[in-house]
Image 1: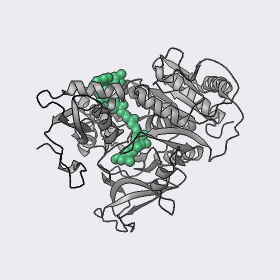
Image 2 (image 1 turned 60 degrees about the horizontal axis):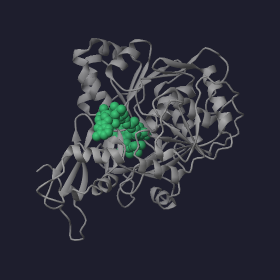
Image 3 (image 1 turned 90 degrees about the horizontal axis):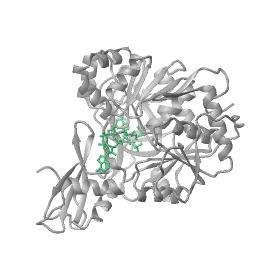
Image 4 (image 1 turned 60 degrees about the vertical axis):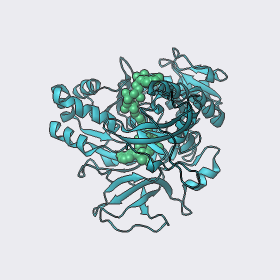
Length: 481
Ligand code: MCA
Ligand code: AMP
């Protein structure tokens, strides 16, 4: 039996585990398919997973976890340079992919193993220790290429069990979502979460309010999404009684990855009588806090620390912020079994991320209410942008923009956006002021090099970038006026 997934076994045979569109697997079928795949990757050091939103991705990750081999999920929309970086950094032995997936040239040097979702093989004996690496998930920083966060098995079990406690999450729950499967939200919470409970997940392939309505009206009990998805639900509600009915009957609506605007929270509450629960996490920490299902779902807060998570707010000089007055701001630092182990091949970045007493510095700024509820009020780094729930480093985009011949100088910022939370703005000093590059040109240029969610949505032309005496770009001086 697997200590991560006790329910992934040949019995009981007909309990539903996964459904992607028309295709589904019971627990017995998943055990057989993942067992067969595990048998084919047995000696690998690490495996890459071509993380399209399909059944095979879930089978591949479960197979790797059953085999005790760390999995590196790849965004199938990554640019060639991004893929090359992840492959050289993480050194996977092979890539797992659906049989019909076309893989880009950047993966041509890697052995390919096609995942057969209907193969049969035995579940391997569980020989892993809880500190062993389970996943390597790449996450953007302010500068430089993304870093691989090494997530141990203990972090998966502790975070998922803490969420079960906070949300009353059981094997009777049926989760619906349309999140990508190469990040913690969609993969760990959205696929491994239901499987650890012995419940099931229905993946929409692609998010839409209509898909959410269909599944929640057809027996699903929980919805996970990023705020952009809840914004689109809130927009659709006035004209869609089926959607309103669906949300009203759901057991739990959960938002995360970025702040849910109070306006969207209130619109959903007014139309359905249901309040969306927010939880707060990070690739490096998995989940830290949540509003509890049996607690008060107050708009604008991410709730209380999860069981096992130590959370403190600290000032710039490291002094703890003791006040729970809803006003005193400090950086959130966390410690607990939910934390990652290290950034792969980056001892410098790993050391910088932790305090001497083992707390992880999240970079998120927050206050605490008198009853302990955490409210996130900002972020330390202006060079990290959250757009559609994706974390995006300004530096990566600036480097891509500077490769365009029509760009002399570039600075990237995020600005408020009602749908995406923040939209990416490119501030450009054109090489030829008479022929400045258009938004379409630069968006296509960036989308060809990086994942398309990193493309700018707005371009503004300047004669020069504002710089301080040291020559550093003053991003806070860049604004609409
Ligand atoms: C558009 N596209 C392009 C271009 N423009 N492709 C190439 N060149 C272009 N110039 C394509 C895109 O690839 C995409 O294709 C489609 O057009 C739409 O793109 P986009 O506008 O970016 O998508 P959207 O509709 O605005 O997406 C909104 C979204 C998405 C669905 C909410 O942002 C999303 O899935 N967000 C989830 C992020 C997430 O899971 N974050 C978790 C990390 P196609 O249509 O084929 O897709 S945070 C985390 O894990 C922590 C632990 C936490 O707390 O949760
Ligand atoms: P990532 O590195 O992509 O895992 O993103 C983690 C970041 O997302 C956190 O550091 C927060 O800034 C943000 N985040 C996640 N959940 C929430 C939330 N519920 N409210 C506000 N910000 C959030």
